[in-house]
Every structure is written in structure tokens, then in C-alpha cells.
Length: 104
Image (cartoon, rainbow, N blue to C red; front, side, top):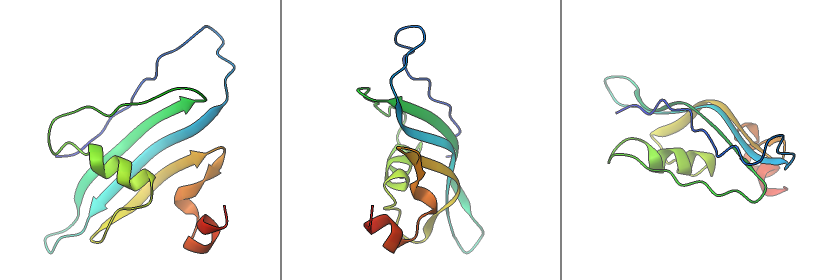
């Protein structure tokens, strides 16, 4: 099953000035198989402001765990992040190599 979702966070007060601490943009994770890639997460977008909480809810097999593990950079082969951005306090952690990630 493919996850293709835009998650709307609660709007809060009008003109909410709290900083965005996590911004996930067009996030995609695939799993390689002998017959080609299985698209597990496709185009997930959401953001969290300081002080907000997010819960991922959905059917079994819809990509909740893969989304969370991908954001944390814990997807195991044959899975891989194939696109998107994960901005943590403005830094794209999805594009950092291991040594850059460890130094943060």
C-alpha cells in the first residue's frame, strides 16, 4: 500500500508565530524487490510548531512506521529514502551523511 498524504496540523491561533521545528516535505521511501521498487511512502507533508504533538493514525500497512522510521533515518535495507526533505530546526537531516548527522 502506498501512503500519499498531506497531514494538516491544528491551525492554533490566527497568525501563529511559534517556530516550526519539524517540517517534512514530499517525503518518499521505497523498498527494493527483485521485481522493482515498492513505493511505501509517497509525498508525505506536514509540519510541527514548537509545543505541538502529532499522532500518526491509519490502517495496518499504510506506512505509519515507515514514515516515522524514515524521518528518524532508521529505515533498514532494502528500504531507502528516495526523496523529500526533513527539516529539523531548519536543517535538512535527510540530506546529511552519517558523520554530519552525528555532529549535530
